[in-house]
Amino acid sequence: MTTPTRRGLVVKTVGSFCQLLSEGERYECRLRGRLRLEGSRSTSPVVVGDWVHFDPSDATVRSVEPRRNCIIRRSVKLSAAQQMIAANLDLALLVYTSLYPPTPIQFVDRFLVSACAYGVPVLLLLNKCDIEAERQAWDALRMEEVYTPAQVELLQVSAETGEGIDSLRQRIQGKTVLLSGQSGVGKSTLLNALDPALQVKTAPLSEQFGLGVHTTTFSEMFPLPSLPDTYVIDTPGIKGFGLVDVQKQEVSHFFPEIFALSEHCKFHNCLHELEPGCAVREAYVQGLLPESRYRSYLSILYQEDDKEVYRQKDYGIFETDDDDPADDV
Ligand SMILES: Nc1nc2c(ncn2[C@@H]2O[C@H](COP(=O)(O)OP(=O)(O)OP(=O)(O)O)[C@@H](O)[C@H]2O)c(=O)[nH]1
Ligand SMILES: [Mg+2]
Ligand SMILES: [Zn+2]
Image 1 (cartoon, rainbow, N blue to C red):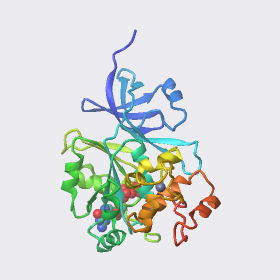
Image 2 (cartoon, protein in one colour; image 1 turned 90 degrees about the horizontal axis):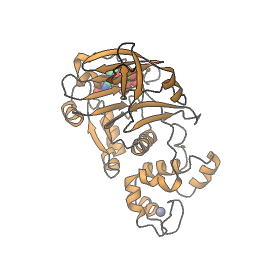
Image 3 (tube, rainbow, N blue to C red; image 1 turned 135 degrees about the horizontal axis):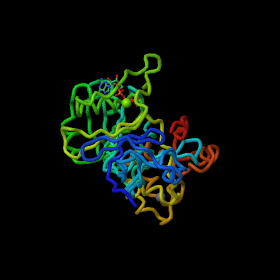
Image 4 (cartoon, rainbow, N blue to C red; image 1 turned 30 degrees about the vertical axis):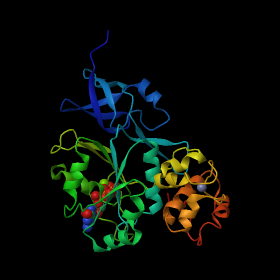
């Protein structure tokens, strides 16, 4: 005999337990052994954002509905280890600061590639716009100019003063949204700005290093009471995602402006390295393709190669070869 199950939304997972929301009530449920086995390659078989069926009589999860999408984090060094971050997302908010703390631009580009590969659109949030030096740093990096052709939307906000928060509310209404970015960029503060009743824990940057202190330690989904059907997932700060497996020929598919340029390359299978008649490299030489984007593209193209090979190949494309973008993320 089967007992009737109910449908619930996973808002938090801790080990083999998860918290569900079902018809306005919260439940703490256990994951059954069989489910745990199925998820043995990752840390948990269910993930925040999953819709599951559970048995309220014994508080166990019986099954997980197929996911529309799922963002997976691969350990950067150990490529076999992977961790699901969230499922069934409509939008990822990548929270960015240039200085407090510094976010490497390669981190942004790699995040965009991963999100694109998982089919999740990204809104790039330039946070802490109340700080003059931050705004100057974005201007120096020409963030709008670089990311608009990359088909990424940008929004300047301040979780501190509330600037831009109304526009952000409009952009996320009715959606399930992931808040992502390095520790200390202000993810949890933004969540509190979206809904002050939430009172999520936040903390200042470390005085010594000027970096975030990893205040949020678990991913958790928050329904926003002030916006119907809107869920925001606060996550712990990340240094990087590792990378999805992509074929070399496919890397440009995740760089929309490079993909558009590649139509004019002489060879249809051009990888935009040093091939003759490469429209992408030509655009870079002409100053029409930002160096940071071209560098990010090449660093992902060479991810499988060892660093020596990367450096040799890099030589001749860029005038300077001081920092290796593959180091940080
Ligand atoms: N001036 C200013 N400070 C901000 C803003 N947003 C966040 N902060 C500050 O930045 C610090 C870090 O904010 P958190 O919200 O804890 O950062 P987080 O991204 O959640 O960090 P983790 O949980 O460690 O990943 C806090 O001291 C916030 O007050 C902003 O818009 N302007
Ligand atoms: Mg936080
Ligand atoms: Zn080319």
